[in-house]
Amino acid sequence: MRQASALLLAASLASHGAWLSAGPDQASETRPCLPVEGGLAAGATLAGAAGTYQLVLTGRRTRGKLRTVSGALVLVPSVFDPAAFKPALAPLRGAADIDLRAVGAFPAGDVGSKDPAAPGVLVLESRQGDAPRILLRLGADANRPESPLFDGSHAVLEVRRIAASGFAGTWRSAADGLAASGHFCAWRSGDAPAVLTKGRGDAWGP
Image (cartoon, rainbow, N blue to C red; front, side, top):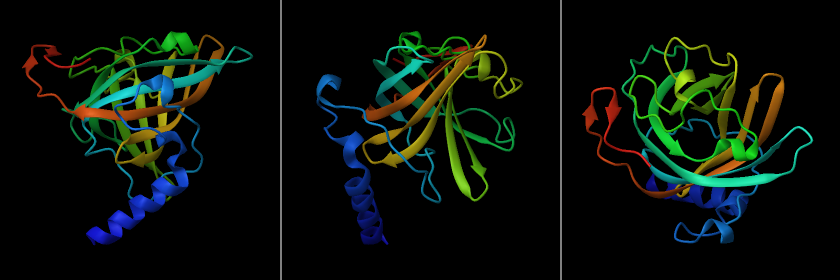
């Protein structure tokens, strides 16, 4: 079983390795984030992917100039009830330190929020037909259990590839009749920090 898993990972890296073209110790300037195509493999999940990441987004608003921005992302285990976002599950929450507006995105609230009840980043996993679907919803205002999925301004990352060194996919955002979209890469840079809950905030994050 372990050998089969290793072969599957090797095949995935060989066929989709362009966005993984440099190691985690290299600067973003020498590690291009290229678009990925296709969908997730059956059984794909980020449930065990808590950690710290270098996050890179490339994209534009409609008819705008293509831009790239980079920053930090932290993912830790979620504290939400499994039914909070039914039918989706929310295995991870987190926070990001990145200027999303630099690529024309419109996050719904603070992406750096460490409030367990309204985190800046929320991983939502569901199924679309027979295929898994994994979204990272950005903005504390959108990540409360009572918030509609896309009501008003929103920014979301959709994962299309997962590997040992990170994950990648597409992103989209909209607000007030304006829209932006592009692709992203998240390269793993370290383990998840220990979480020490303090009231409405946690002692962790970028």
